[in-house]
Length: 381
Image 1 (cartoon, one colour):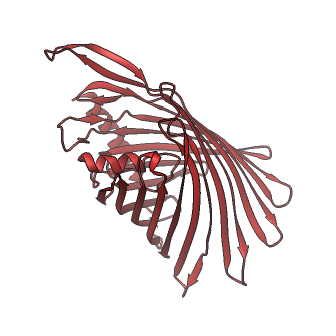
Image 2 (cartoon, rainbow, N blue to C red):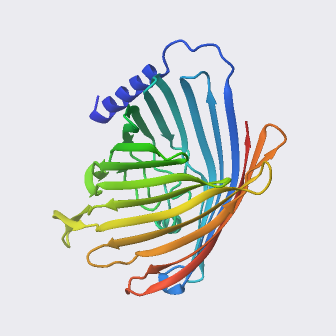
């Protein structure tokens, strides 16, 4: 049995432990949500693309058998389109299905096991790869950046403690990813590096109606492999975030700020001579990236039972790759949601947002773009 098979065996045992034991006979609590979302961006031609669109139709289901055990299910169909130099590139189909089981092991500890099932299209031709590359940009914020990344299992544990007037939360998780074939034009196996994540969070009440929450998350990755050979060592990621929720009259608001720092990565390329002989490896730096986010959202009453949810946020991205800062820029979004209760068991959430921003092209000049996000969710409880 190889090392990866042993790791899957350990995680399978964790699933068995998590779901073992008698479940008290209680009424099953469940909810089902279905959405239709559209995101469309229009770019200055100097950025290399003119249009990028994403149509996403997700479905999410959650049920709890008792106070300790719950399960979540997510699946979606998506279509991405990118227009460049009078050509349209399309990538569509189902995305990977995600399942998560949660168990309240004690009043202060929760265990989770999640699986990403490879139902999505992970093998892309050249045109599909163009769409996947554009939609995966962190600053643009597309809801579905990838269609498929192979099978993966994530295990996690989270604990909460009270220290005086502060609440302390600690969480850790480990993601084990299987290999897949990402290219339809060339046959090779790609294995994403396994991911470890640790988070520390604090919160406390402020005054009579305020609440502060802050946290630090650290992520580290093993090397990605190509046909069993180290290809890319992703840089570590550190995210620092804070939020403050407060009441102003009959409205409630939540302001937040966050910063995500990704350190340099190492890309390993083989050196090959004219005869095809492998001379060795060349290590290139993938460059660092920093994403800063700030925003505020609220719930404002517009009737006796109806609340409007306005929001505005700003993202600023800095990146450096071998001395070039292409891809750096900013994006400002603003919009509103309007949750509505339909009958007694249905909730309806229409929403719309507008955005505009700037990105740095390969030549070092900044160019603008604008877009719209719209959609609606219906939830049955």
